[in-house]
Image: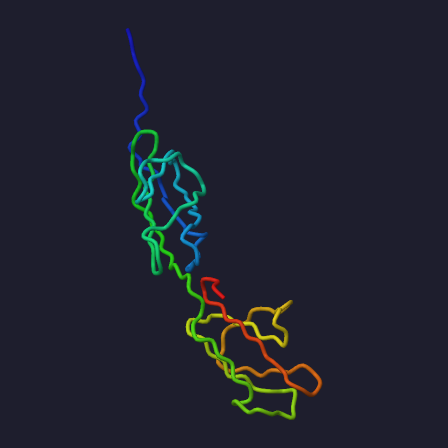
Length: 174
């Protein structure tokens, strides 16, 4: 007698998953890293791509269409038998613009102070974090959550003093 064997596989790749930039909510670049996983997958297809690719844990991907706003990446996985996974997707917001209309006001706009301790009024549309410094280099100044008011200590000595403020949004734009 003659016989042949074949492996029957009706189970699609399991637990399909895609993460854009490791699950970040925001990016300021159109090129991102996709983190991919699916049990039993041998190939992956990314919507907007032109062909199936060998399964990889990470892939560099250019978001489409270009520009600002939310982008969704959808992927499917395929095993050796040709079974397809469910569609996995993730979304990210592309934001390439820094916070707008940054402003700082020292002690309510007074021209003079007799104290090193002053109050700051701050504003920047779209700000998430800020740095405040007496030096424009911001060297060793930690980012802190954005707030419209802050107490501040001016540099010592009489004379003109400047307070420098930088604002950063959730995508990292300064």
